[in-house]
Length: 180
Image (tube, rainbow, N blue to C red; front, top):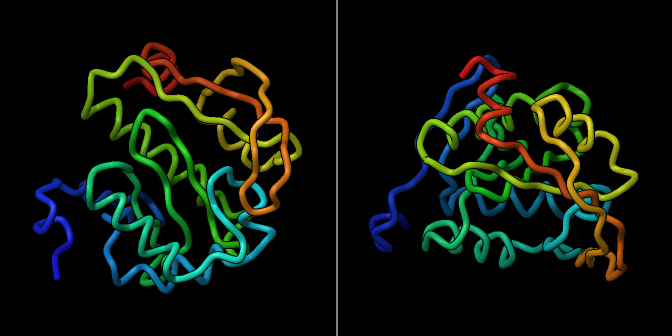
């Protein structure tokens, strides 16, 4: 069943990188998404992801994408879903814990930002990371995001208020850094 045909939303295109494939999210991804996010070490770094994370949570997320209320790709390494990356003006990503430390987040995030700036006229992409999440901080820094504001936000997984660093990547900075 094609969830995009049912909603009339055009899915994001498939993007091939050196080691990864970014694919439109489909319902067949629900079990893998649930398995990867049902780890507190992953979900504690994300704002809106609950813990425990269930298949129903994954189905809800995929339905949000199919309805056009969110934009995200499934990140695949070979035939294994290893995470997701956002495709809109608010950039987010996560990887399953087994895939940390290999540069996959940077590779996927670079591809998502390149697509966004090529496909839209948007002037900027925003994101944030929780203080203490140096891996995410480094991914965003490598891509070219710059700090904006420090804010307090709620982590749904832990139920705690956390400090988050807002960041922004402008189209002009993207072009200057990536010869786009």
